[in-house]
Image 1 (cartoon, rainbow, N blue to C red):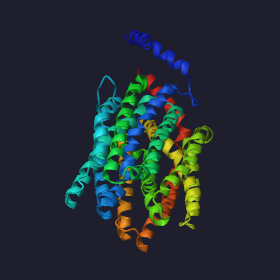
Image 2 (cartoon, helix red, strand yellow; image 1 turned 180 degrees about the vertical axis):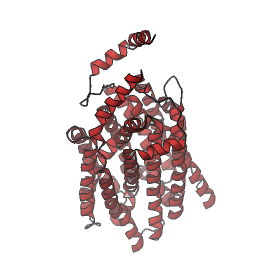
Image 3 (cartoon, helix red, strand yellow; image 1 turned 60 degrees about the vertical axis):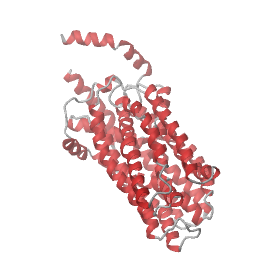
Image 4 (tube, helix red, strand yellow; image 1 turned 45 degrees about the vertical axis):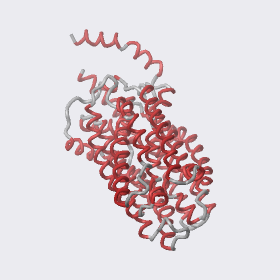
Amino acid sequence: MKVENEIVNQHLNGPQKKKRKELGLDAQGIQKTMRIHHYLGDGAGQIALNSITGLVGMLTYFYTDKVGLAAGTVGTILLLSRILDAFTDLYMGRLVDGTKSKYGKARPWLLWMTIPALVAIVLLFTIPANASPMIKNIYAFLTVTFATGIVYTAIVIPYGSLMAMRTRSSEERGKMGISRAVFGYAVGMVIAILIIPITNMLGGDQKAWIIVGVVLAVLSSISLYLTFVVSKEDNDVAKNEVDEKVSLLESLKLLFKNKYWVIMLFVMFMLNIMLTLNGSTGVYYTKYILGDENLVAIMGGVGLIPIIIGFAVVGPMIKKFGLARTAQIGLFLGIIATGIRLFMPYSFMAALVFGGIATFATIPMMAIGGVLVNNTVEYGEWQSGKRLVGMVNSASSFGIKIGSGLGAAMIGWTLALGNYDGTLATQPDSAITSILVLTVYLPFALFVACYLILRKYDLDQKYPQIVKELENRKNINN
């Protein structure tokens, strides 16, 4: 009977296996499953994610300078909402692992979140302008939590899990990471560079921000649908999913025994503090250190050069140095660039040149951070026999959310400590110092910390053998 079943399976999967054979094996001898339109469709999903994170990153400025909320209060609101939604990540991981749908485990969530994503983004900017401070604070907390704790979580965990469910090939995962980073960075840079000039052009008031929010909301909804249509979950990878139920507590214990997952947890935690600072403080630096907030567009425009170069070279770097080593090289360049800026914090040219190099330094981690996380799925399966795709991504996202939430809170708290007042055209010296801490000193410290921790990640060398051993186990069990 077993032999007959194998013959039937071979017959049913014949066309699929033929297509696989045409794609060939990657450099590590692992079967490839993806074509170029798969990468493009997969990457488009990042538009929605980076629209949410980019806009949430700008909320401190929107709340303090356009709506009139206190900087310290804004920081606390953002941190509390991120702590709450970080815990929803763990629940979402369990939902993904337990989802049963004709579309798979992760893919259907992209379809289900198309409308909620649109609504969540618009609500961020419709805070009642004439309401009392208490009502404004409550509204801000509820809408940010809805956007990040519910909608973003219900997208990012399935989206991240899709990488592990789509292919076992580290090479293909690397290309998926690059594609996602290109789409994500494009949206993130548009928000960081153009949102201030565009909203100012539209009047600079709350209505202008709502208009921009609506445009990005519609674009995000469409991108999620496109990703759903083009993406698929690979059947052969899905068959390797462990059916045995694993409790949340046991899952967490297994994750913390996975040393590479722990490394990535801390690296992504600190990286997202830095990315939040970089994406949200440029307007303060240009407005109060350089004297013109519209310079943020010039700095962002010049910053596109290292981004383009970064995405052009990250693929060849991965082929030459491997995933982790490529990320380490990028982080080391970031240490050098931000270290030099320590000695010229008021220089516009230093901000352009060395800030650009620091931006380049983040490209590798942006491109392959998710790959390094998802490769720990195979290591954990090899180590414990439990394949925890959803939990690996959800618990990792927990660290990311805490990191970005803490980064956003640090902006508000640091500005408050420096007696920053968004209604003043000229800030006190203490506020200027707080802005320099956020834009110059903290990024240097975070680059150093990320680099030192990531040096311990040596899974790249072990990964091909781990995949082969897992395949052998599957064959023996069958």
